[in-house]
Image (cartoon, rainbow, N blue to C red; front, side, top):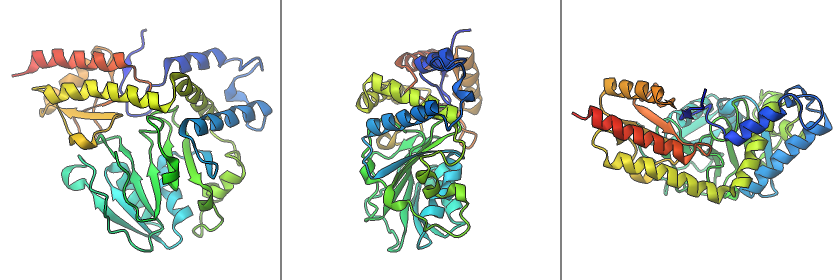
Length: 361
């Protein structure tokens, strides 16, 4: 069977070159006679894999020397708790709520201290990013938290908030490695890998070293202390070995493609094809204000639930999979991550054009 165009928000499309290379190495990794899935995480061979992955990631993002790179388990959801556990010294934090995941992180933080929502876009169904130039951030706030790209609602920060000197913590799950980033502007830069980097089951956290201490909230589990993980170079216990190996392959692929500047150009070009169509369509319309649109996740609707369902079904039959919008918002959503080829977006627009002709009343 031929491969389809997979517009899933995550787990999501991976580069074909990476999948083919992994398939070739599945039974025998570089002559060792076993798969990476079977390999001891304490072996020299695996140590080379994880170290190379970290170095390639550092190269791609120009990670400063005073930041640790951690490969962790538990998903971004677990990290919602790890952030306050490790950072809430004053038991106070500021959250900017721009979507479901920021809202969940905010609610999780309320378990551990006084989490305050200093801005929100919930009033308009998270269809925009609020003005973050002069927020009322508490003087004693330990950090300011954002979700930088909102997978469900298709919004993205194109300018970081003014944190007034407070530590910035950012969940970048659905935009990770889609464009360059200045890591020095963040205290914590993290994301689940299953959207833009690798298979589900791993979180990558890039954390400034001065934030990694033994001074954590009482009751913080040993495993969830960043210092535990940092001191052991992500090998305190058995890490998600195969996931890290796959992420490492994607890092190599990104380097071979020309790095993150090139990826940003590619992603802008792909997104423009779809947004230009939506802006001129008489049937479909995007749901996000133009200035806050994501390059990664593009939600759109027809305004008719039955027609939306018909579109999703017919698109699937045409080899365009996973276009149904998140259950909380309905409609459609095309996730066009790094590994989605331009041809996939062009095929989608071609299909939408035909569907519009056949269904416009």
